[in-house]
Length: 115
Length: 111
Image 1 (cartoon, chains in turn purple, green):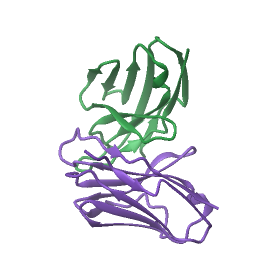
Image 2 (cartoon, rainbow over the protein chains, first blue to last red):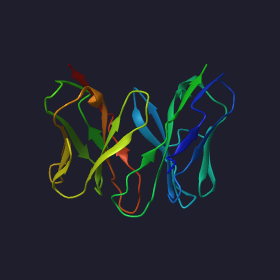
Image 3 (tube, chains in turn green, red):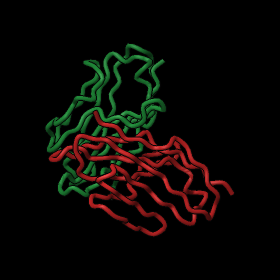
């Protein structure tokens, strides 16, 4: 079975540009998580969806960040306008969302560099 | 607030045993997960504890004490490929599936 698929794997762009990160969930999973990872702050949860509905977006740093889940298998994270401090690795993870023991499965991440 | 503490770095020798500790102070507790993350790769699931005691999975074991807010990951018969970061994560809120992650422990295994 295919795992969580993220694209692009790497993105380098100039500050002020719009950045869109994409994520395809594992088939049958209904919870979706977007994380940002930096050396200083580790892995931070940005937003979490369950059954396509945003449940908790308290980790979204500011209005420049937005996330959508237009269908059960796909999500986007958009940054507009981007800033150098947004440079990080962005991970998407999914889980079955049923049962306390279900782990989250991570995609390979998008390495984002804002110049 | 929610807080998870792990040592930043550890070093051990191939073939040895290493214990990576995790302490947490969270508003609630609904399970603790350990993940392994090799440099430049995604975190991968290792173990899950929700009741006190030891869970064993091959060379890896994880222990939980809820009263002490404490867990450890035990790695036996260390191999060079075990060099990675180990992340402790707590699900603090009942009814949600989100985790709070520690900043991870970087383990170096030396020959």
